[in-house]
Length: 225
Length: 354
Image (cartoon, rainbow over all chains, first blue to last red; front, side, top):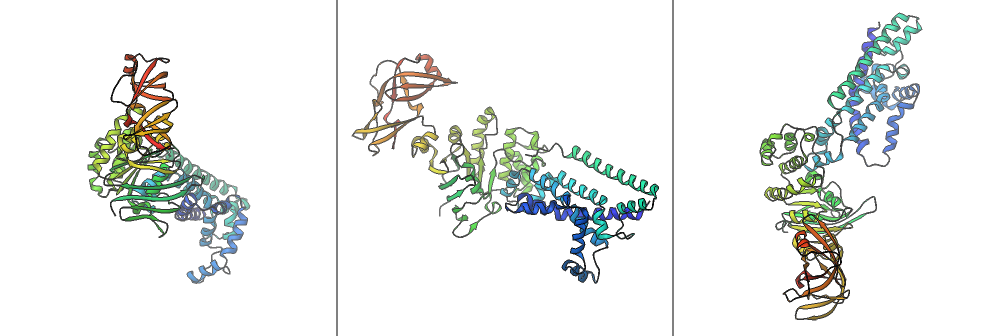
């Protein structure tokens, strides 16, 4: 089994989830509470990775982070000559974009189901907006936040097209577990492919089952209004 | 400036409803102010404007010397800066926090949270979650939570409406006592006349988004400023009439085919005579002399018994409603079709110009 690829995928998925938690929460909060009329445009952009072929997304990301793009040039300057395409950093950027809707949508739904009066009650008690969000919205929306983090983790483990476009297939740098399985099948090494696939299936099922079980035990009984 | 809450502002809602408020509440006299009006009159919106949860389109809101909102000067304080406690209709207790942590949530002195719990009789409930306590207890938690933050003003949106009828009656006086003892000027929204009288010192009547009358509760109920206010505060008899004579401080009205005497308050011509149903006394038989100026012969049209009181509808040359005890209905044997005398003191007739 290609333990190197498995370890790389786990690292990539964990980092993607962590970054998305930090980036996704304010974005979801804004999407939930903003009175702006044009926010549907932002919602559409966030949801794009759901419908776009991974190759298309990967292609655009490749262009956007290439050394000739402003973003790539900035990265090169900051990292002292490094480039994002075909590196772990580039893979991370692509994964974050690709899994954005999987984090933001459950969070938006969860924030929206928190009774607004609770937040207003906190404001009237003199509690700041940030603090009211942290002490009221986050705990009450925890099931949605956890779901968002876990879905983006699972989604990143399984991604293939985007990784291939942006990262290629460099062992130890960008060869994730799904690409490793593809390689094994191409090399007619069905035994290794079966083992890796089975492991992936087992891990995915266990994580999801544990998530749903926990949500039921801890959170399902909270009233939403 | 005296210790006064002043609100003169306008707010147009997306539904097209416009709220136009002009209100002064002298907070020294009015420990508890009732914001009264029928459903849909804009009471809750006004409360939200005062709290800063919504901002008016234009106007001012001043609390004592502090400007909370002033469109001309570009001032619009956030709820956090106003320190106006808000008790929501359904209390909005934080469902994931225990009673104790709800009360301590924004307490000025969190170490005194247990004192607040004790004061509101909640000490035994401290570790419980809000969903596991009764409606009356939830109300006390909401009040304790709001008062523990030591607000400058307390706003309550129909605080009794989420309770069942029996609890509501029991808690009415308890609530008034709590608010007065709390020492924080309070504004309570209600559409219930009995609640308004039981809770308030001062009262503002809001109809169709407009403040129509503000003053001491007894004044608003006895001398409503106009017909809409009279109807909304439950003056059952608002009778169109005409002033036809006046002498020695009294004036005589033509109402329907009958005459009514009342105190001369300077109105002329077409007027409304407002008479509260409980100020109409019924007597059997023929008119006899008494100090009451008005003694009208009438016929009973209908009797509705509602518990201990009965509503008697009469025809005295004009339709008149009287509120008497059910015991009196039995004693006097009042039945539809019977003749009866309706006795009304001149001082019980309040005139409004038409």
